[in-house]
Image 1 (tube, helix red, strand yellow):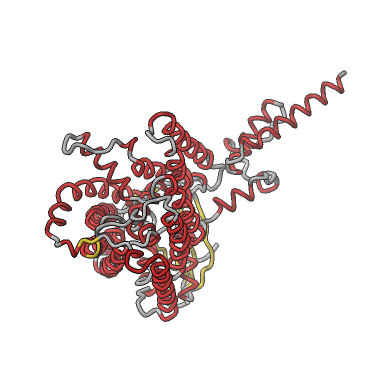
Image 2 (spheres, each protein chain N blue to C red; image 1 turned 90 degrees about the vertical axis):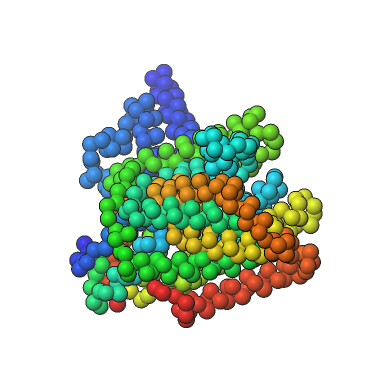
Length: 76
Length: 457
């Protein structure tokens, strides 16, 4: 399991709200901290790793639990 | 004798198990254990697959993974992960060429307009709507929705996702704006862009300029909302009927059933309801389009919006690939005289196209899906897009009935021309012009992705 510093709940939201929220939250986080992001939009499965790659943040892993996708991202 | 009997039994068993093959052809691997278990019960060789579902034998499962069926690879290719946008776009264009060969190319708002007109007729507010069963596009939209639902179920991606209240309001508002924009502009992102560009329509080119303006304003709004009214997109949410990850999900099986019902509807439609028998192909293609839309998460909003958000150029490249395929197919159909030259060319050059484009662009960005994007996402269970559809169903007919006639009367003829590019540039010149526009767009998207000049995130 990944130790997380903060959680961002994007459940129920659809594209593009999760990514906008993610970008906003990550902006405020200190470097090296880990964010846990929860979402239910299947589009996020591709979008979140892609966004991390683009922005240079570390995408740690994704876990799926009964319709809820959990993404773990370390701020660069 | 006993030996023989035993042999017979095994052959029978073998046959039965083999026979299960074709049955499970389109069924996801997850549903296979159940199917096998059923057979196994009959031949008293029960594997604990079915029991495992009820009494959690979770520790045993990893030790004894189910044999990979011959369709496992196919399933994971088709439903294991999303398809690239360009794959979806190319398939959609091929299907749209099929639609054009049968009747006319892919469109989306016309179908939802027909749903709405029928509802208003039923409520006694208007009259004279084409009955749904006689409307090719009305049926097409229904089958797209069924296809997307079936596909989402098969991929175990279906769930009813209830967003915060503010999001539902944005869905509705977005749908209303799209309804107004699609009628004023005489088409949506499909008829007036994806198909319209492929059909070499001048108005469609202008419509996309309007779209860009609308999308730009709406993106600014979304970013402002996030800073100043974060409450609109937070609050109570619910996720219902999601596929459970820790046990065999019935979703894929339900998906097969839904697609089967969709195909049956298309076949029955042929069996007397449709006036033209050929329309069976039209409706079946609609079902396939629904599947491809959901698998590739086809999104025109994303193509335009990401210009101002992340700069991701992949959706743009995908869309360009699709338009190229469609353009060559449509042009051949038109030159050969198989389909009408002016199909998908509207009298919207340039004022209706630009005004409609701006309004539609605003709406689709706020809703998070254009007409067709709202349709397939509604099938996947996003309640926000259900509200977008409600907005579309009500405001497409209302705008057509009460706003468009007055608006069009106001415009001088020079502002509402029907421009078919080959009339001015010839077919060769028009194709070259389109290739140049698509190439420049691609270069622009790549440049923007690299430099981040216009991006916010």
